[in-house]
Structures are given as structure tokens and as C-alpha cells.
Image (cartoon, rainbow, N blue to C red):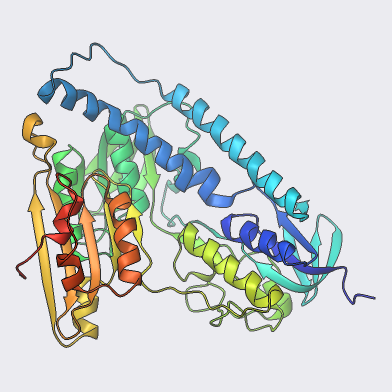
Length: 450
């Protein structure tokens, strides 16, 4: 007779948790999964998917202008209805929730609705009912983090922004990470007046410095009022909306204030203290190379571990977990050369090392870069410029980092990420024939190092 009623209990039905549960069940494990909010987690409901839909919507105004300015189209009067966009977005998210439900059911995973609390190393309680499992996997994700300051209750986070009843015409966005940058572009593209403030001298910390500087210049060309070395002291509700008192002594009146100042691992009220699961200095669950916590049979994956907080990484960690425990195939998650995109306007695509990281790790490097106006804008007379950068180890000729700012950057860099994963050299880039005319061909025609 089995010692426990379940082989695995998963806490959190986001991307990582669902993938781990499905694969584990497919390998023969008896699995249950608990979720207190919505299937699919942050990405499906208040993250990647709805955000990308809003990004698509925000591009049309510029496309209409370009069509008339350079390509002979007469578009005619146009208008935008926020409510229609949000309603259509909600329908799509509900469809995806249903797909996740079907995937779990089809895999034979028991679904439990409610907040899960760990009672002891093998027991989880949900809504007064206990479940006994040989292994517990924590995949509870992260949650927006707002600072403590007077009037912060009047601000919203990225969770609430997807459900606004009306489009704010004047928006203050506080923060300098990718979420802040993306929503600045979304609201600007939809016609709102946008001010973005960031407390540091340059936003998008962690990205290549040349990329950061280039995207700042491009964002300003779009009309976003981007202000660095600035923060909010307090927020007050006034007759015209909200008034933010800024650290330079000025005040700014807007309709909505969106805080995108980071996310924190969602570890509270999980019962971690009952089993002495160790947290790191930033409050994330500490794990080893196989995602195991300080308790031998309790594992954690995804944003709650604060390794690389990206949906595809959580999916990868979930697959590695399932193979390690239930498929007799130990797999360590790989966190090197992970490609990423920022769906700013224009977007960013990146894979591999930044120039600063490469200079720290390698004796000598070569840097290749190019900035140019894309072919499309030769007729529109637009001022937008695409930026591309390659970082190469001079000794081995291996390409260490690849970065792009410009249209379809994410789509282009995804392909080159395969090359970097395979250890491609600059000589191999040079010997590859480009597709002409495309922006992507620039990466295989860069000849002279900086």
C-alpha cells in the first residue's frame, strides 16, 4: 500500500506548476494541483498574453500614420474603444483558462481550488481538507510590489491595469523595469499622455548599456515624457484625478498612476515556517541545481525562486523537475543564454552576455554594432532607428551576446538564440548569407569591430 495518497502536490497552477503537474502525471505519478486565483497564473491572466494583446492594439495608430505618410493609403477617420479591447481580451483569456483546465484534466491531474498551506513535509491543507503527498512542489509565482508612501492606495499595479473600466487620458508610470517600459508604450500608442519616472539615471537595469541608452532615445521620439533620477513622494486624490508630489519638488496631475516597481516572490501564508524551508536574502525560496529546497522532498520552481523570472524558464524548470523525479532522467535547469524580449516601442530582443558582463568574464572581446533607419521608414521619413550589437570573444571567436532594438526584435533574436546555444562563432555568422532586404541580415554582415 502506498505510504501517501499522492506522489506529488503542486502549489500554484501557473505556467511552471501546470507543466510540472502534467509531465509528472504523464510519467505515471499521482498528482494534485491547487490554485487560489486563476488557471495559467500571471502570464496567462495578468502578464505576457494580455499585455501582448494590448501591445498589438497600441501599434495601429502609428501604422495608420505610416500608411498615409509614405505608402499612399487614405485611412480616414478612426477612433479607439478601450472597452472593446478589454472585453475581447477577457474572452481570449477565458478561452485560455479553459485550455489549461482541459490539459490538466486530460493528464489526470486532480484540481483543487483554494489557497494551499503546508502543514508538514508531506501534508498540504486546502480549504480545511488535507492532502498527503510524497513530494510537494511550490510554484506560487510572484506578486507586484508597491512601496509604502502616503496615498499609495490610489495607485494601481500591473494586476489591475488589465481591468480598468476606462482608458486614462493622463498616465503616470513609476518604475524602470520592462513592465513599466511596456505599459508606457501601450498607453502612449493608444493616445494617452504618458509620463514615466524612474529613480535611477537610466532604466532597464541588467540590460546592455547601449541598448538602454538607445531605447530611451527612441521612446522619447514617440512622445513619452521620460524622466530619470526622479521618484514620487506622495499621492493625493484631487478633483481632477490624482496629484503626485515628485522628489524634485514639482507636482503632476494625472488620471491614473501605475506602479511597476518590481515583483516579489509569493511566499507568504504558504506554511513555509512549518517545515523550515529556507529563503534567500531577497525572500525567494532557495533551491539547489535540481530545484530542491532545504527540505529534501519539497521543491520550488518559477518566480518564487527568483532565478530568471520568465514564463519559458518556469516551463523549462517544470520539465526538468518532472523528468528528474518521475522519468529517471535527472535534469538541471539551464539558466545561461536565455533569450528575452521587451515589448516596448520599439521592442528589444537580447540573448547572451551584455558588454559589461563579457568584459568581466573574458580577457579580450570585440564589439560590433550598427544603427540604421529601417527600409520601411525611408518612405515615411520617420526618425526611428534600429540598433544591433554583437559581442565576441576574441580568443575563441565565439559570439557571447546579441542585442537588438527595433521592429520584430523578439522574433529575430529567437532564431539567433539557437545559434548562440550551439556556440556559433563570428566566422560562422559572417559565412551565413543574409535574407535581403531585412533588418535581420545586419547581424550577418557586421564586419568591423568598434
